[in-house]
Image 1 (cartoon, one colour):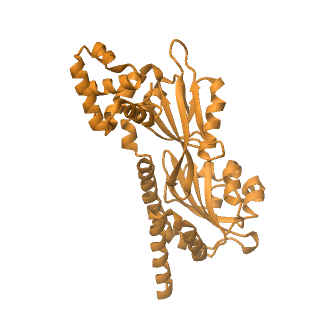
Image 2 (cartoon, rainbow, N blue to C red):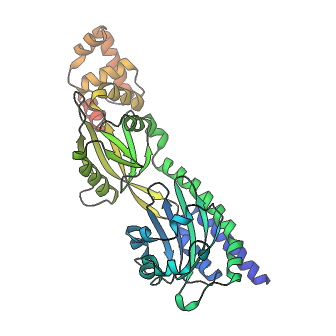
Image 3 (cartoon, rainbow, N blue to C red):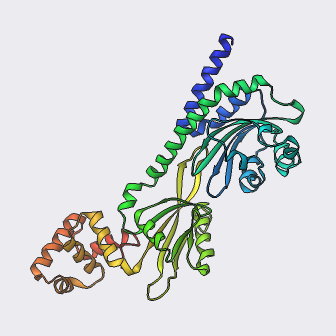
Length: 374
């Protein structure tokens, strides 16, 4: 290999690893890979291994290609079921996966690949994990002819770097989701908190939400998606999630999820949330779902106040009594303490919450979130 070609290859490897850290660079890298392999279109395909939904990020394909692939054509991709059996690093001369005539008769080939100059593809499996698969593909137009052994050798050389970059990106993505969601902080919240994709796929659930899902009483999981336990509530919950995730005009909202008596319905709030980076798609739509159980609300609210303002149990009980408008005498009766002690607790609450009057304290508790209220 000439010195210039070695320099070009080294620069391409550097670009691949840069993209692992900054996903916004992948389109530029895909362009460079297309030139390196003397192909036309190149794309990265991401598939949820559980739901089998798939997305793509491509260059040198029609502008609508990624959208139509995610909406429909991933269902017709004749390669994906076969790729599912391959481990990361496997080179894909596609005729090793299925006969040429099967591919060329398929809807995927005729309606998606031919218009996108992906008639003669080669690729490499970048990741095949329990929750996701990632594949790199480079294609040529029908008139350009198939890739030659030299091009497969080039892919064989760059492939290991793509695989390692994928591994790094996947680890960072999982870390990003946890960090963007403030996972550790959310685990301290007594109410259920879930982060879900537009279709309901659960990206994160705090410990309280996991407990509610385990009970399957009001909310449940269907494969990997959040669902209402009662069919009568299912459509409304999915609509709230979809509008929030896509940040539509009527984004999110509130609803009650019915449960068998005597338990009262769960209270649900759905709101938009932006997760800044996934493996190669930036700004993936997502929604945050808060779920409160009114049957455990008194304990829940007091615990949250204690976490927010570092109150003692007695101080939190005083604050909740004030928020309910019950006054100090109710605290005296409930906790079996003197009025003087109750006033001392209230003074400590004022100091810790930086309020001075009961009205300010009530407004502060009301503004602390819908699940601090009774």
